[in-house]
Structures are given as C-alpha cells and as structure tokens.
Length: 145
Image (cartoon, rainbow, N blue to C red; front, side, top):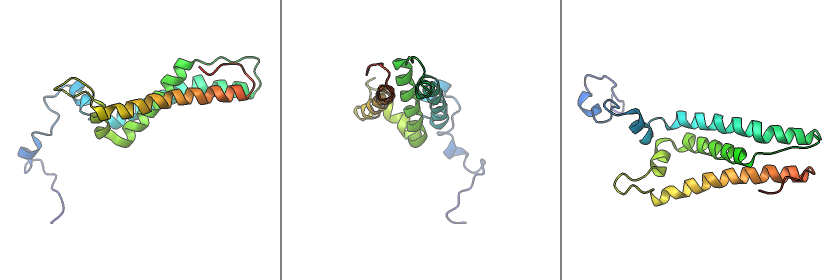
C-alpha cells in the first residue's frame, strides 16, 4: 500500500545497516542520545527524590511549626537541576542531547548548547530560592543562600 512502510528486515537490510546500534559502544550510544527519554525518567525520579527529602519534607516540618528546620541548599539545587534535566530529556529527546553535547571536531560545547545548560542550572537555583523564601515567610531564619 502506498504510504505504509514495510518492516520486513529482509527487504530493508541494506538501508538499516547504517542506523543499527551494532558495533557501537554503550557510551557512544548515550552520547548520541539513543536513551534520552529513559535517562529523562531517571533524572526526573532522582530530582524528585532529592526535592522530596530536602525541600518538601523541610517545608512540611515548617508548616507544622517545628522548633527549627535546616535546609541543604546544595541538595535542593541538585534536585532542581536533575528534575529540570529529566523534563528536558523527556521533551526534547535525542535532539536535546545532541544540542548539549560537545562538538567532536573542536571538543567545545555548541554555543547554542549553553542556553539549555544555563536554564537548567538557573532552574535549580530558582527552586532553592523559592524554598528559602517560603521558609522565611513561615518565620524561620535560613537566609537566602
């Protein structure tokens, strides 16, 4: 039928030889973005775990009028960056991975690749700032940074 693809491997063996992952190392496949969306799920779960234990639980303790609360700014920033990176990988997939990878010829990051990296790091610091602002609003002295 016109417009339909045949998935018979015997008829397309010559065209699929270049796109098959055979002969590539796992590290090279990761660099090309072959597993971008599963990585996105992993980073989203990791970031969510960090934010649950180091931000949400602290805010819940503060809302229940705990005597004192402590916040780990580094853990909140890492959780925010990881969660934002997970969302980035889930949305953009392989194209997003290629954008933030280094150029093989020059060994430098693509100039456009700095934009998502700066946005991801900024998201982590924004989450940290918002959590601290909420703690200050609830009457705890935690400082802004």
